[in-house]
Image (cartoon, rainbow, N blue to C red):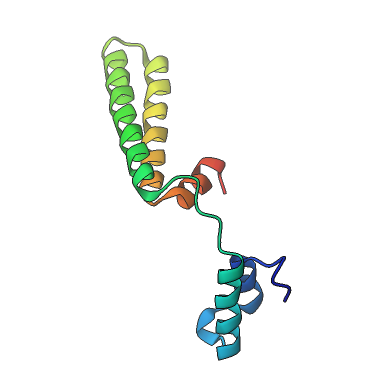
Length: 109
């Protein structure tokens, strides 16, 4: 293990389940975390909750537009707005879990 090139996730990938680690592996993991701490997420948990609320509000507006268009008989346009509302709900749900989960959903990982 080279501490200058390893990261905490890579260490876990190489050493498997932490339940099976010996004391030396725990010590190495702790030292690696002190020497090269993980990069903080782009947005904090609180910021992600604000983003989730914004997506939820957008979803409500898009769904209202879809309902209005459906009532007026514009089914194709209503379907487009309905899909947009669904995407906004999915992004809101992902954002509630925090940035790493949100990033994975948005990027399709």
